[in-house]
Image (cartoon, rainbow, N blue to C red; front, top):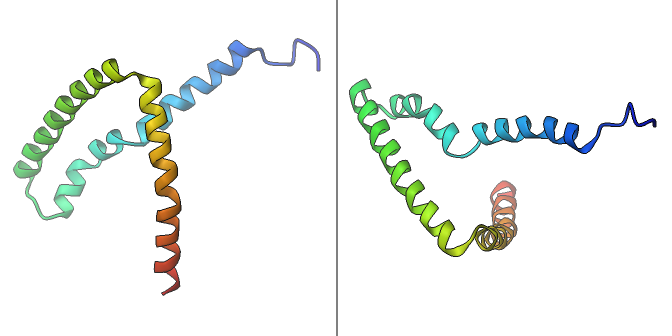
Amino acid sequence: MTSQTKPNNGQQRCFRFPFRLGYGQLSGINAILYYLHDTFAFAGFNKVSSDLQAVAIGATNLVFTMLAVSVIDRIGRKTLLLIGSVGTAACHPKSTLHNLKSSSS
Protein backbone atom coordinates (compact mmCIF):
# COMPACT_ATOMS: atom_id res chain seq x y z
CA MET A 1 0.00 0.00 0.00
CA THR A 2 1.27 3.43 -0.79
CA SER A 3 1.08 6.30 1.61
CA GLN A 4 -1.58 7.92 -0.60
CA THR A 5 -4.08 5.07 -0.24
CA LYS A 6 -3.46 4.22 3.39
CA PRO A 7 -5.60 6.37 5.73
CA ASN A 8 -3.67 8.15 8.42
CA ASN A 9 -4.62 8.25 12.07
CA GLY A 10 -6.46 11.57 11.71
CA GLN A 11 -8.64 10.22 8.93
CA GLN A 12 -9.48 7.11 10.93
CA ARG A 13 -10.54 9.23 13.90
CA CYS A 14 -12.59 11.41 11.56
CA PHE A 15 -14.68 8.39 10.55
CA ARG A 16 -14.94 6.82 13.99
CA PHE A 17 -16.07 9.96 15.82
CA PRO A 18 -19.48 10.37 14.08
CA PHE A 19 -20.20 6.66 14.58
CA ARG A 20 -19.59 6.99 18.30
CA LEU A 21 -21.83 10.03 18.50
CA GLY A 22 -24.60 8.23 16.61
CA TYR A 23 -24.35 5.16 18.78
CA GLY A 24 -24.60 7.30 21.90
CA GLN A 25 -27.81 8.83 20.61
CA LEU A 26 -29.39 5.41 20.03
CA SER A 27 -28.59 4.00 23.44
CA GLY A 28 -29.25 4.98 27.01
CA ILE A 29 -31.43 7.85 28.11
CA ASN A 30 -31.78 9.41 24.65
CA ALA A 31 -33.65 6.38 23.35
CA ILE A 32 -35.91 6.45 26.40
CA LEU A 33 -36.63 10.15 26.04
CA TYR A 34 -37.36 9.78 22.32
CA TYR A 35 -40.05 7.13 22.88
CA LEU A 36 -41.37 8.62 26.13
CA HIS A 37 -44.72 9.87 24.85
CA ASP A 38 -45.39 6.65 22.94
CA THR A 39 -44.55 4.61 26.02
CA PHE A 40 -46.90 6.57 28.26
CA ALA A 41 -49.66 6.52 25.62
CA PHE A 42 -49.29 2.74 25.32
CA ALA A 43 -49.53 2.50 29.13
CA GLY A 44 -52.90 4.29 29.00
CA PHE A 45 -52.00 7.82 30.09
CA ASN A 46 -53.59 10.77 28.34
CA LYS A 47 -51.62 13.49 26.52
CA VAL A 48 -51.49 15.96 29.44
CA SER A 49 -50.47 13.30 31.92
CA SER A 50 -47.73 11.98 29.65
CA ASP A 51 -46.43 15.52 29.09
CA LEU A 52 -46.20 16.11 32.85
CA GLN A 53 -44.45 12.79 33.30
CA ALA A 54 -42.00 13.72 30.54
CA VAL A 55 -41.19 16.92 32.43
CA ALA A 56 -40.70 14.95 35.65
CA ILE A 57 -38.37 12.49 33.91
CA GLY A 58 -36.43 15.36 32.34
CA ALA A 59 -36.05 17.06 35.73
CA THR A 60 -34.92 13.78 37.29
CA ASN A 61 -32.41 13.34 34.48
CA LEU A 62 -31.05 16.84 35.15
CA VAL A 63 -30.69 16.28 38.90
CA PHE A 64 -28.92 12.95 38.53
CA THR A 65 -26.67 14.29 35.75
CA MET A 66 -25.50 17.04 38.10
CA LEU A 67 -24.99 14.45 40.85
CA ALA A 68 -23.02 12.24 38.46
CA VAL A 69 -20.74 15.12 37.48
CA SER A 70 -19.86 15.73 41.13
CA VAL A 71 -19.21 12.01 41.73
CA ILE A 72 -17.02 11.80 38.62
CA ASP A 73 -15.03 14.82 39.81
CA ARG A 74 -14.47 13.29 43.25
CA ILE A 75 -13.80 9.66 42.40
CA GLY A 76 -12.37 9.96 38.91
CA ARG A 77 -13.46 8.72 35.52
CA LYS A 78 -10.97 5.85 35.26
CA THR A 79 -11.92 4.42 38.66
CA LEU A 80 -15.63 4.58 37.83
CA LEU A 81 -15.07 2.92 34.46
CA LEU A 82 -13.15 0.09 36.13
CA ILE A 83 -15.90 -0.37 38.74
CA GLY A 84 -18.55 -0.42 36.02
CA SER A 85 -16.56 -2.90 33.93
CA VAL A 86 -16.20 -5.28 36.87
CA GLY A 87 -19.91 -5.00 37.64
CA THR A 88 -20.82 -5.64 34.01
CA ALA A 89 -18.47 -8.62 33.80
CA ALA A 90 -20.01 -10.05 36.97
CA CYS A 91 -23.59 -9.65 35.74
CA HIS A 92 -23.20 -11.09 32.23
CA PRO A 93 -22.69 -14.74 33.23
CA LYS A 94 -25.63 -14.59 35.64
CA SER A 95 -27.97 -13.08 33.05
CA THR A 96 -26.78 -15.58 30.43
CA LEU A 97 -27.52 -18.51 32.75
CA HIS A 98 -30.92 -17.04 33.59
CA ASN A 99 -31.78 -16.65 29.90
CA LEU A 100 -30.62 -20.16 29.11
CA LYS A 101 -32.74 -21.62 31.92
CA SER A 102 -35.84 -19.65 30.95
CA SER A 103 -35.53 -20.53 27.25
CA SER A 104 -35.11 -24.25 27.94
CA SER A 105 -38.28 -24.51 30.02
